[in-house]
Length: 256
Image 1 (cartoon, rainbow, N blue to C red):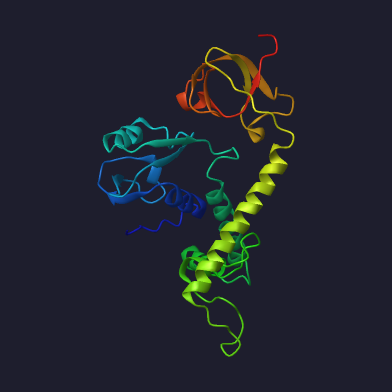
Image 2 (cartoon, rainbow, N blue to C red; image 1 turned 120 degrees about the vertical axis):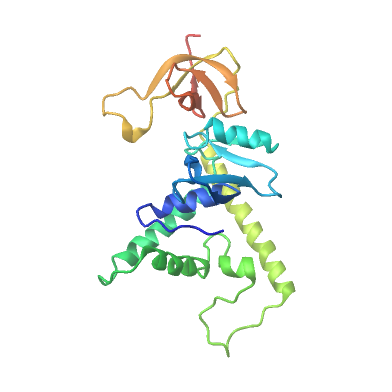
């Protein structure tokens, strides 16, 4: 895939869209899709042959009718999620934040000016050669079996294919253990509510950073008009933009 470098676009947008969409990016004059706008002003989407499902987030970028029509034509099921909830694609967000922080430090290091694309390649290399706190191994080793330790070659222990398989299993076990621990802490003071179509609920009043200090934290009550999943509902808030009517955070109306 040939990517036209755009230094005026943020790297986090580039990595975000590349990690979220399993599309081959092609170019055709006169076509417009916001999904890949960070790559080109005139992109066209072409599905991979082995694409089985598509992860979508509740944003104007992914709610576009043109995008949904494309997925339906290719018989690609849609997994609906949201960007600001625990069940969203948080691993991508964490990776993007880590890379952006590393690039920011390198950009302002020693006052030497370098292209952000060069700095990004170096930061990705460092990221892949750094041991994860959770897994206990570096991504470069788990993915490719590459020895990324800093020991001299004379002191390095040769890893076999069997060792790599065992380490991958151990890394997976460590990841699951960490996930279950964090889930236990998160769920400790939370209670799941099963809403139905027709229930009246209160919803969050926009994003925290977009609210004034004295604005209400929640607004409503509104009526649920559609249940997307066990945790996402479409609510009749009369917002002009249809994508603004999807909510993952709801509170029951005690007077209903």
